[in-house]
Image 1 (cartoon, rainbow, N blue to C red):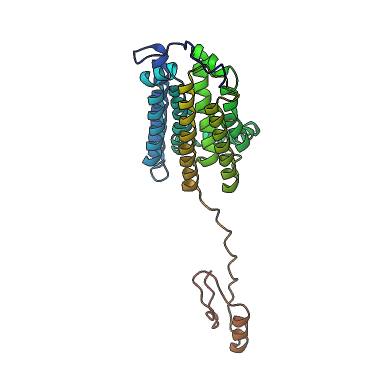
Image 2 (image 1 turned 90 degrees about the horizontal axis):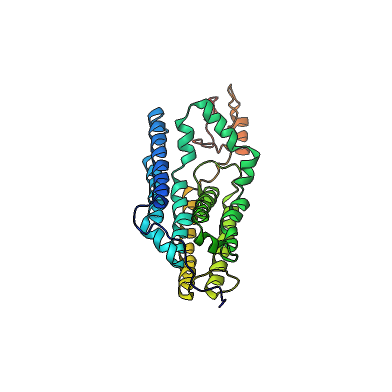
Length: 309
């Protein structure tokens, strides 16, 4: 074990009582939920047939509820005094809430709620080069799982426990990078650089491997720089290992559930022909090129009627 695995005074969190540090994040979550519901309702009113469904809204609100739980006073206070609490908060904010938020299809909800001219401008932004780079699976992987060693193998984690601003910035990073990764892997919204299912499964497998490796190193006390008692560090590592696996399995399930195989191009219809045909030559034509189009049967049409397309 490293000498860094010792206790240290952490900054005071809300502790369950009303405080500005607790109220502001919860107010932000409530505002996000209210904005989503307003856009969802407007999209349904503009086009009831194509408007986003209730399942989407339920998924997004579930994500907001998870965020509210993670940022609530008791959980935040637990995270401020115990590394296991920090890991629980990290899992909810960065791995459980993002898939639910993304399954709410917020981009589609926005595009269907605004006028067509604004929707076209937003679509242009989605197709821009910076967003294509940001939404690439490798970028999303680096920003989410790839930053874990930076947090736990450097003094960064200890700094976030002693500074409220850094602590909140870490929350924002976990949430945004988690949403980006979930969107790229399994989001129902359009994404500019989304590859095929196999490539996304490979990226998800790399994320699983990174989480498992970091959690094992944290449990064993290798390379880490975490000022907390050994029991807390090992408990947090176990939460990271098992909780991360469950979250990534759920994301893989969401990927499969939202996957729609690409339709193959339809076969070119057999050209229609008409006119009198010599029965003998028609029979030879039918034997040479049997009709296999939709709804057709070989041998039809020899009397001059058109083939079904």
